[in-house]
Amino acid sequence: MKIDKKILDSIVRCYCVGNLTIDNELFIFMASEEVGGPCYAYHGPDFEKKEAVWEQGGGTMSIIEIPDTNGEFLAVQNFFPGFKSEKAKIVWCRRDPEKGWIIHDVLNLPYVHRFDIIKSGSTKWFIGATLCTSKRDREDWSDPGKVYVGILPDDLSQGVKVWPIMDNLLKNHGYCRGTYEGKDACYITCESGIYAFIPPADTNGDWSIHHILERPISDVAVFDIDGCGTDELITIEPFHGNRFIINKKYGNEYREVYSYPNEINFAHAVWAGLIRGVPAVIGGIRRMNCELFMVQCSDAEKQIYNTTIIEEGVGPSNVAVINQADRDIILSANHTKNEAAIYMVTD
Image (cartoon, rainbow, N blue to C red; front, side, top):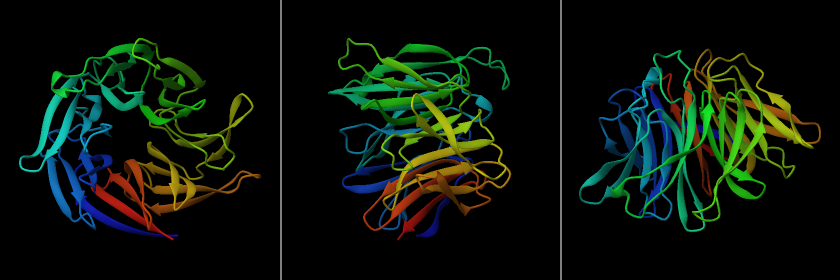
């Protein structure tokens, strides 16, 4: 396996990554969390073409494609460093061939950190997790976060209406899309653990909520890393924590089978999926060695995992992976280095 790095750009507090297809062309997105920070799109054979989605925005935590569109997406804005996010909102973004990128506000949702769009039948559900509900200062956690849901209208210019389905979620920070008991699910993490949210079969039904792990969790990825047929939970613990864990299910409980061996501080990025057809975990640490790394299982029976350091000194905040026929592309918002980067992985 060969890994080659390409620096796309220099972006102060580069935080968010995304990718989608517009007119059959792949676009990569990198966005800043800085006040007034930009979001850029990169495309072309080597992603050499650059477009400004916005120059003045910032506080972008998540970029999520709207299903069944030509590359339209929703994104968080105004979630600024220091949790200064009382004016956080969701914006709708679409690319016009003549006018360029068009941005509309669709939802004001204070402290929204992660969100997703999940389909159930023909219904497109919005689900959003707020880190908290209010704050007096950075260290104030007295007003916990909530999970909100709503139905995306066909005409997003109407805005999105949401309502809470769960509250009292302290440090409500992490999110991962996955499956639970064979159904599409939204995994949300907080101080009380990991919850799986499953949308109803019709718009009149209730969301089902399952509490699957009970201890402080900052972030999670869900994937079958050892090929056993059951998904493992890859967790960062506790909030912005110093432990990076793979949890394997034995019977009705999860047990720790891997812990990242190096001393770390402020683990933040976690992704799990296939790298060149082999299950893998990608992790990122924002302080100390500020490493981007990969974990793979070399012996499922003995639960032996190998750790590969991809690069140190970069401090990823978020990562994603694009699987292609001849290569896979790791997208990394290298926050500590103020860098938007991709890593091409070939056989």
